[in-house]
Length: 354
Picture 1 (cartoon, rainbow, N blue to C red):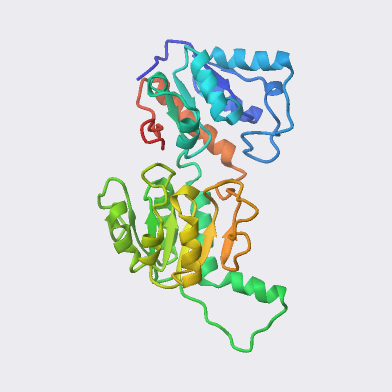
Picture 2 (tube, one colour; picture 1 turned 30 degrees about the vertical axis):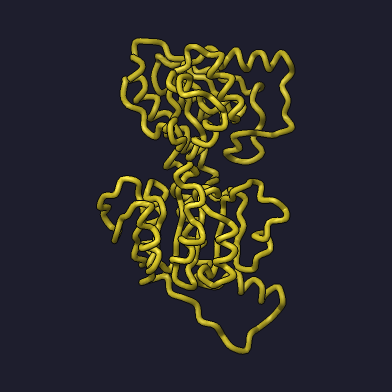
């Protein structure tokens, strides 16, 4: 595709990364030179803190060294300063750039926010870490489903009030219930795997409609309302694109049967939050577990914060202590493909930005 193992390839580490993982990248092939200057990178505040400590400031000399380092590379591990502005600058200033690997599973939004035109974006490839976050996100989705079925929000309220109800309220069985997954990509399929292990029947949506083993029915987004009519739980894993914006609107929520549990681990822009609140009040949605929001951080005046049947998670469900290792393993695999001239997986679509 791009390179040959007889050619020296320079990789620059643009974001915080543990030294032992940098050595893993160096070990991929003798033809690879890795530029890594930890004093130019903000310290991590927690595992996989790709942006690093916001209080970190480079001196003017360090700033010059940072951009000089990135300007020498054909390949970048991470967006410069983990920001759209950093991506825009390196795209303009580095004529050697061939490939950038993003830390995020859904980097399309950041690429779009960079403001780079199609001609510039066509000069290099951008890959994502899609799939690395599939398991933690799927586990979080399972948590949301179980919370909804087992009335955890109501139990927490009773506990806070030291209330022991006279009448015991039964919970719902997950086993034998129906789940609809909006977006049967890697995250969606991992969610489906866990759901099936819990005894759920799973259907879902996919851009390219095709049979999938273990999935009862696959439809496009236009077929989502029909699937929802029989769903007991719904998990959204879709990215934020012009084609998915407010896909979950009043019409779609009204297609759900009363008492549906709703989980969002995709992007907040896929959900019309006003419509979701109406669905919660109207009983179509009995519980919502939300890791992503249309505006982040979630505004202080959002009614989602205080809704008794909503869990607010600050876009952290994909995080795990193993994330940097998993991303590095993915990058090393991609780097071998790059050196062999193969086709890189998980490329950002610069037309639709996902």
